[in-house]
Image 1 (cartoon, rainbow, N blue to C red):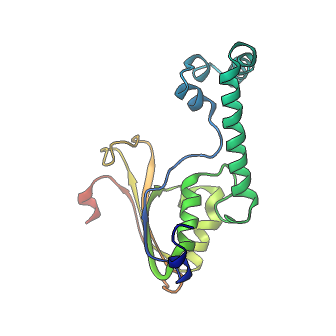
Image 2: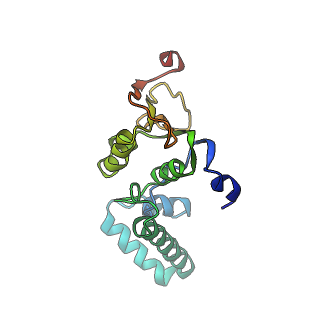
Length: 192
């Protein structure tokens, strides 16, 4: 919407990014930890957590209302991604923003352009995204996927158990019959 003239002329020559990697579904533990209620965030199980949340309705109605607003927002976003038809390949299951951003990038790149993103390897490995990944392969748009493991903390803000990748996707008119794959990269020297 911000660049209608670019979209009108076929799209961007280059789309680069590191989109957010967030599940659209509200995570109670994270939400209550961020809002200073560690006893709820760290409850021993979901049943106790739900009881503590219900108690907020009488004990702290303002916090309870903010929580309900956050729940409604997450549900509305999830409903949009799943039901609008705008994201048929990524708006499935527990929707993750990285997948939605990736699908959008494939639509706004020019036919001869390229997309380069740093995203979780789940695009290639998660069951719910298998059709999205298969579409990239079948349409011959996947240029490369370089999978990283963060054991040596190549990216310091990411836990060492998180698997992520640098992915390159071509525009619609460039056909890539043999994409390049590499996995378990731990440092820059291994990229060579």
